[in-house]
Image (cartoon, rainbow, N blue to C red; front, top):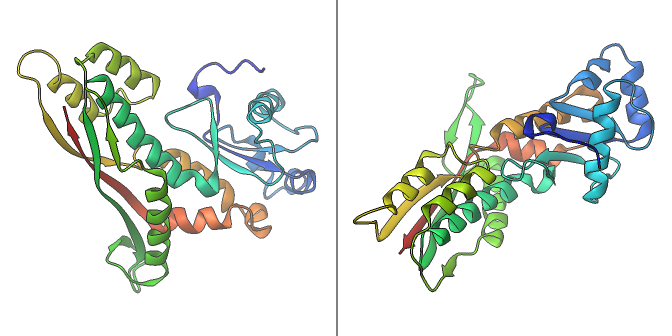
Length: 258
């Protein structure tokens, strides 16, 4: 396998362009700059890369090993498993679910007995009339239908109620897990570890997590590819773009009993 060193070596998003599309991009002066981007990469499905040949070869091996080297696939790097990718059409709810399950694992390591999902809210945006400014709005319109669909998909991925036998808290193990999941900077999770450390540990905790904070930059990177002229013209990533541009946030409220 290619030697990928660290998270920064992997692009936030990747389009596996069929060879015809890749050639069209490379031969058009208006779009050839797409191929120079190392953050939002366009790689050929089977042909030779015109630029960034070494990086393209490395990404091809990563995707091939994961069974994701598929012509026309738009992929987004998982913010919690930074050497892996998710197909764009599943990414939003997949990453939100991953954040919840990361919290569940932290709670388990801290001795939790029960974890319960209280609520999962998907907020959507729409341009205000005449202003072009996006803002959160109540239910109504196409954006509301998209948020309902994302909510439904998210609910299918969440384990709404988890039970454990309970155990003594292992805060050092929890901190190691947070580092492994790229969540060391999440203050809510660090506070939970702190409150389960030492004397008078917390016995009940209710928290609302953002399901989009860590993935936002990666989603924007994929939108950059999907909305590029030559890519948009062949309708790649259209469903993902519509969803990503409609969803403003995902918030999951969880209760934990220790």
